[in-house]
Length: 250
Ligand code: SAM
Image (tube, rainbow, N blue to C red; front, side, top):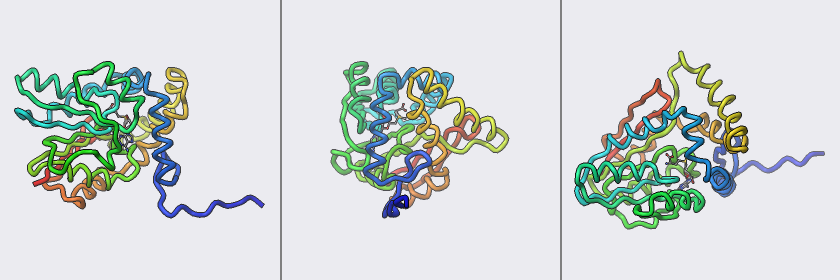
């Protein structure tokens, strides 16, 4: 008779599967290790370049602070941090911009491209940073990959100084009239593109499924409030495909 595995005490979504915490962290790490060298190209291909507009909108929503301390968590290859850095420079602001990511392979690609940024290899759930040390905490398309999301939000709250801003850009729920078309694109086309362009269908299957398995925007808002964020709110763009959640530590 086939052996039935015991139920997991704590189950975390890895795409549409439920796995243990350590398994999720290890599987997500493996996905981004495999895609690191083609990550940016694939982002352009899969989103038809639209991710650049989402990220521009995100960065332009952030405050410009003289001598500000900016932290981009799950920052991957650093494009958000670089856009923050360029915008601050453009307006003549001096600031410190740090990228943090759990994956050395992603950091390696980014660090070669943007050596002037500060880079930290760390888990969003356990940041090696002092309490009340950050003015602006950003996380873009990162939170759904984090195993213990509540812990990551608690860490965001801990490292932000009073008055500091939390901003999260993530995939969200598309408006009902676009649902069928969107599902077809995300669940059929994206894994195929992953197979053809990046020769890694499994990794892109995970990325598609993780979009489906992620919190609704109301659930994320609730979690932000639970860990203490004030004036928490969200807005959506591109028919709900992406949502921006913001909150403050007051
Ligand atoms: N922010 C970048 C962007 O917008 O292109 C990268 C987003 S990429 C989809 C997700 C990133 O989250 C990967 O670089 C991955 O290594 C990172 N990541 C996954 N789990 C993490 C964790 N627990 N802590 C920090 N980073 C994590």
